[in-house]
Image 1: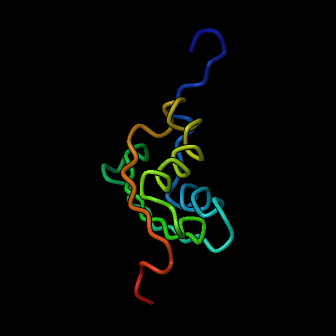
Image 2: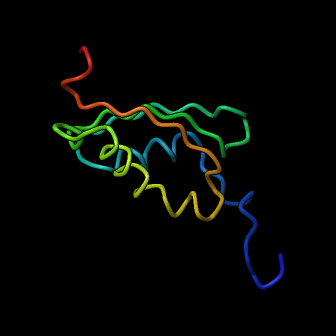
Length: 92
């Protein structure tokens, strides 16, 4: 592309890369990700993290979106559907 800008198609995240990024949110965070379209830019993620304890869902989602904002702004991630839970909300 002109001006040395790299096309987002060359910077796609794999499922493992996205999972690792989401799990970097805080120690003990677990994530499951699904590529919804097979294009590596439309994702569904379920994230369980101790950092979510005592926080409202909107606060939980803001934490995830802050982590992912650069990838969303650059077009690497076009769509991200998230479900967030504190460990106390999940049956072991």
